[in-house]
Length: 450
Image (cartoon, rainbow, N blue to C red):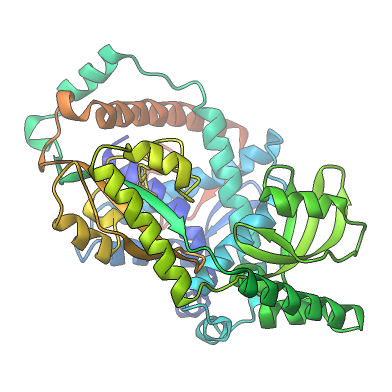
């Protein structure tokens, strides 16, 4: 399977995120069923929407075979979805609900945290938006699970990696951009006891109003700092043990059905929690989150504290890794010396696009093995912090080679092997399914070749 197919497959997996915004587009397309796979169908509007999104991502430089390749991938996904039903590959409703809540939260954040703005843009209520997300998400998660099961035994040896690399024409080896290795130490501002007491009192007042008959969901929408769950009346859906922060989880499992907790403090702020239902080790809760806000004095104190740590690091009296382990609030990097990982690949080798503008500008003024001055930082969930950046290393742009880029080439070879396994599986699977392709689209040779 070539690179175009691999990239396009990833693109199509991500497409489900945008489906709620497509109704106007679909109405412009004279719709019809173009493929049937058992009880599942592919509509002309699905193909046209996917193709349009592909064109938008290519800056006008489209592959001439793109539309056929997109339809081929849509068919591949429908075959996996239909076969998953036969093989009883199940994605639980709780997982689908949780993913829908996460995506709705992200959509609200991208709309500037304004729920009404999102509703106006899409012409739908938040409840309707979430409802339209559920089926595409269920299909997407099921397909991902099927892919994982099909390719679970994919393995590649060092000799196969070398063989894969040597088979690539020299003029086709990718030219890799500059890569950065960067670590951070993140320290949230410590708020005063007075501010914490203010927040706890506010939540206790809200609790009193709920007990007096006011609607929990309405008050969550009005007061909660957790914008994603606030849009759902504070509901977090069903979660198992280990899925929630310890303080929240412990308080939730101690509650009786429909009971409301006292204010509970966690790393995110203070929660008012109501247990809606418990099913064994699964709990369905809703909450109202209010974050204490650090004062200007709190920020000055935090900045001084971080600067004192920087002085010790620069003088070699303290290693950056130890400072991170003892003081950093970033749990994802606390145990790996503070290394920042790419959200796209999970790698510690970052490219310019992995950084926000201000971070990139800061790194541009630094040399490898240097530590930045204390920098103000706001976390994605709105918490004020101060951080230090440690610029570990930077590699120059270069053409891919085995010495410098073995891991990337290994992953490409592994991906190629996984693709071969998927191809073999597909040819076997289609013999068990009813497939009907509209004659106008059969010219793509959908069944004959992937």
